[in-house]
Amino acid sequence: MSYDFKSIIDKFEVDGELISCERYGEGHINETYLAVLEKNGVKTDYILQKINSKLFTNVEALMNNIRSVTEFNRERIKARGGNPDRESLSLIYTKDKKAYYHCKTCDGYFRMYIFITDAVAYQVVEKPEHFYQSAVAFGNFANLLAEFDASGLYEVLPDFHNTEKRFRDFENSLKADKFDRAKTIKKEIDFVLARKDYCGRIVKLLRNGEMPTKVTHNDTKLNNVMLDKTTGEPVAVIDLDTIMPGSICYDFGDSIRFGCNPASEDEKDLSKVNFDINLFKEYAKGYLSAIGNGATQIEKDNFAFGAILMTYECGMRFLADYLDGDIYFRTHREGHNLDRARTQFKLIEDMEKLLPQMEQIVKECSL
Ligand code: ADP
Ligand code: GN1
Ligand code: MG
Image (tube, rainbow, N blue to C red):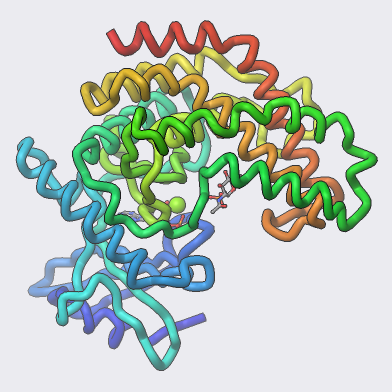
């Protein structure tokens, strides 16, 4: 689909003439464009994004979240002598000071960001160093936001990591058993039911105030971190659509869930699916060194468990979706969600055996 980019960009506080505007990057959620503007012979790059307003139905609230978090980050980066244009995602506001522009003729919601220069977002962990550096980036992000008051954030996807609610949803899918699949997956169902007590642990700590509720990113994958093109060092965390109040153990755990398995999330051959504790060590080292005093003791005590919990929650969601007839996660083959659930359960089995070592690693990295 093509848009009248010139008129869209004209709504934002930028100077210069639009030279080009092309699709950019490999994100799956929003439509991302690289816009190049020229003024007095000098070219400047910008990111223009058409927000996925089907998924994010309340764009105003979504953009308020991004605005408050990025403004907070920019101030903190400035205060410590950094370069906020590079180290934080930075919005360009519209001429009427809004964080996005609604194009009525094309019914598109657009936002603009300063282009983070000389940096790459890797799609896969090509070497452990990338994983380590992504951990530094996410740890730094959590450190920057440790003092941010998360209570004013809008829950973009309500109950996203409310594992108790996820469990109830799973039970409902099981009860309904719309496609008569439950009888063929008894082992997997029992796996989920046997671990019910995992569900309440972090949710309860948050609820009774024992663990602080903080800003969480909720999509802590490698491709949402920009690493310096030359040095490989972290520059900034991007893709802030899913920032919500929660526990930093969720962000830590989800990175581990995704990054410590050398096989893919939907691998059918479970002998290839393993939890790599060396990668866990890399991540814990990077994350804990960067978060520093931005993590409390109770959070550190739950990082390793957070990895099990996020893997459990994800596996349970895949299995519930399989029971529901594959309506949430896009599937490409018969039994795709079941395969995905199985990889998660294999990782959980590995992690359960290694939990004491994982906890020890977190302790050592916290010294
Ligand atoms: P999605 O939500 O679709 O995943 P992202 O916000 O992650 O979209 O952006 C997609 C890609 O665009 C990123 O992986 C990155 O390569 C690039 N990108 C996004 N924001 C910036 C930025 N401010 N500067 C440079 N590149 C960016
Ligand atoms: C979804 O679309 P993607 O890959 O960024 C899901 C995550 C799951 C992940 C599992 C909004 O993320 O919660 O962990 O799939 N995102 C949403 O692959 O549901
Ligand atoms: Mg992304």
